[in-house]
Length: 196
Image 1: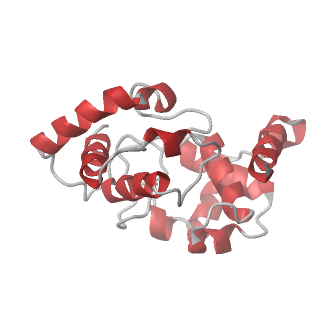
Image 2 (image 1 turned 90 degrees about the vertical axis):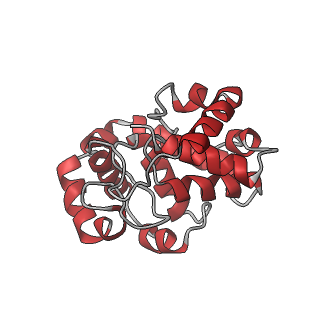
């Protein structure tokens, strides 16, 4: 219930006239240069294993995740420390900056494995991933972009959802990965990581 209240508060805050003053991508770039780019990459494309790329993520998604980190609802220790006491304006400006960046794969993306790619493609359809993440997996609103994301990050995230160790703004992802084996998850992660 607390999570729903925080999500509702975040959506309401984004809809208020005061928030129109925020969402300054240039200011967000300045904030990101101070601490975000070391892990998430200067161009928002992470070159660090298991650290997600943020380029082209929907601003609403980044805003929501930062609030979850700040409030201690989503536990990722470096991010919880970073977001602790962060003002809404800083969060919204960072979100605007990363949303403004051109998405794409990390430089160290592994070569396509044809069999793994085909297996992932076969699993994606019945899971209806494109319903929430949209057909090109580019995300929308509070739903993340998963196309061209770091493969190992995608796999770990899906395992965490499957095992109930990660919760999103709702339980859709937890249900979407029920019954998937680690091999299935590896195939889906590979397929999504190969998307541009």
